[in-house]
Amino acid sequence: MKIEQVELSLLYLPYVHPFETSLGREEGRTFIIVQVYADGLCGYGEVVASQAPFYSYETTQTAWYLLEEFLIPLLFNQKIIEPEHFYRAAQKFRGHPMAKAGLELALWDLKAKAMGLPLYQLYGGTQKEITPGVSCGIEDSLEELLRQVEGYVKEGYKRVKIKIKPGWDREPCHLLRKHFPDLPLQVDANGAYRIEDKERLKELDEFCLLMLEQPFPPYDLWDHSRLASEMATPICLDESILNLDSVRQAYEMGACRIINIKVGRVGGICEARKIHDYSQVHDMPVWCGGMLESGIGRAHNLHLASLPNFLYPPDLSASRRYYAEDIIEPPVELTKDGTILVPEGPGIGVNPVEERIKRATLRQAVFKASSY
Ligand code: OSB
Ligand code: MG
Image 1 (cartoon, rainbow, N blue to C red):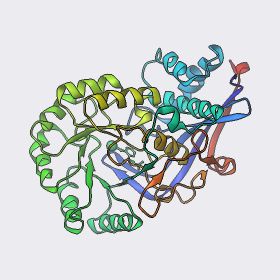
Image 2: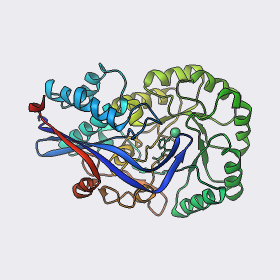
Image 3: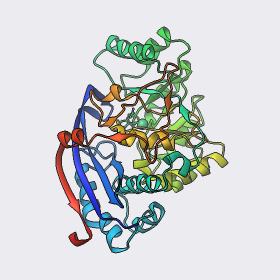
């Protein structure tokens, strides 16, 4: 098997509802789809970097540049086809995990398709039915937030996460607890607080939250460990977790009790599995975060979330929660029990619709061995 061609497509899809976090508000998502062709098969990956560097320093443009100049040439110059081999070769380039992950995911999909197996079987996934959660943005009013959450609960979501920031934290938690006393509820600050806010954050303990996600900025393991030692609500880290080393350091420092794994943030499936395995041995549950992915990225997340130490519900909702028309068929839907089934077909196990991808494409490029 030899890679014949790699294709990059920059897509824009509007959200069904604007998504606001402490980092800002977005009306839609710009992202890159990676396609790797070999032996009549096509592996699909998604680069989750956004148009602007809010969540991480990477953007769709920096990722495109890394892929074109450094990462795709690895495949052609070193005749790489195995995802693990690509993971090791790409480590010589510092940073840019989302760019690396997008290409590694496409190689995993290709490998699984060549073997005729669903991805979760290659990974050693054991959970075939996932109970997902829904992530709710900051809304213009508490009434609007309540309306949104009521809608999601009615659709069958069994866990809700809300975004918080200074000035939008106690009140939304209080309101949701009043209306849904038993709903598994968690909050995510995307690093909006500072250690000076410690006492105010500790007040969130009264709402019996599943976890408090990333209260402080990404670099700040130390202040997370100070807060964690004084708070009953478990701290979960998202942006601070860059690789296995940061998980080990967070664990040793007591900076968190729960890990959010996003395959893009940690630079691919190989690193994500190392984090999963370390966390399992150290009794630290993990769960799969989301980046409002298209159906392609979300299918990849589903297979990863099938691994046994993914013990909390993922941020992984049905297609219609994000986009009026997803780029896969069939769309992801909740079962009547509020679950999502991990696809059983080869590879990601969902079918990308080429014509919808083309319609959403802003820019496209094809790379072959002769391009380099
Ligand atoms: O912090 O988890 C986050 C989306 C964009 C950037 C950061 C985050 C999120 C989400 C989306 O919460 C969750 C989802 O994909 O459903
Ligand atoms: Mg988060």
